[in-house]
Length: 340
Image 1 (tube, rainbow, N blue to C red):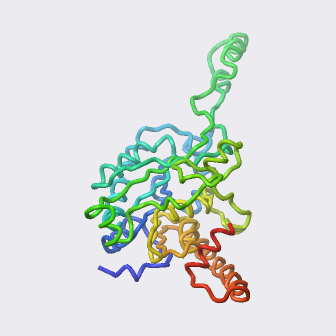
Image 2: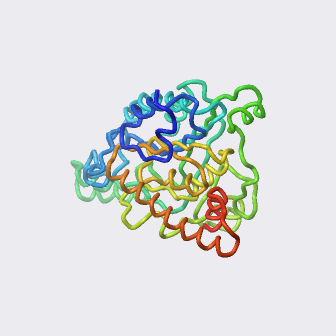
Image 3: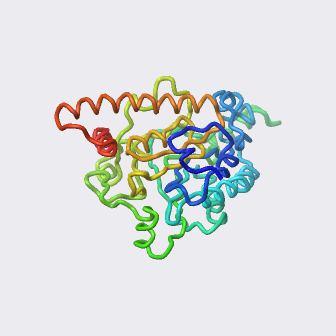
């Protein structure tokens, strides 16, 4: 079995399941990931060209991507993700954490897969709250137009059903399953032995509030912002060259990593790293990262984002040396986190 040092601070191109199986057991502190959701029969075979071509995403051409309802989606997702969760359990240290983004519609399948995979403890469900999303409910006028009925009857039916659409209202949150591998002994025993297993409640969100399982990066209103607002995404953090369609805000990954990693040498693993947000967040906070993705295009984007972070960090180091003397990389990461 290869040593974990062979994988640290690298973005690896490869299949998630087979690559995970090559990592040593009990070697990473946190798994934080946003896997494929099995929408529109794309399953886990996410081709860069397919994902970035909206026409290819549509199982039914008249429906926007992600709107086809098929019970088999959830079944296939569960059968596949339980294998991922088993490997995640194996590589996570005792007391370590597993955070996995999902869609509201298939969250139950994800949580069940994680729960059934091994001995994970489902400790919570985190909620990313937002207001900017596409309303997916559809009018059925096009169906009425095809009915074998008179124009008058069709008109009356349309008037009767005015405002009544398919049951797909605007989705304004994203759930994140939060699981933990059982500790060895007490929480204190475990963190002494494995440097993981507790949450950093020194962290604050909103207006100096205790960390919460609900958070937002959008300013919504005074009450919600006070309790749940974390850093807003910057315009530069994604990168103009980043073609990934579902890039997570950097602040969210920073928040979760900051909350759940104790050791400066902690390892954060993302088996579906995409354009690299988890890896960038870990690096900004002075942690180690391992990223896996099957797309060579996304791997290149992730590596570019990490390279640019090195450039910004070098500028920060030069500034700090002038005023305060040399800081170690862990302190620089904390400084960078505060600035953003």
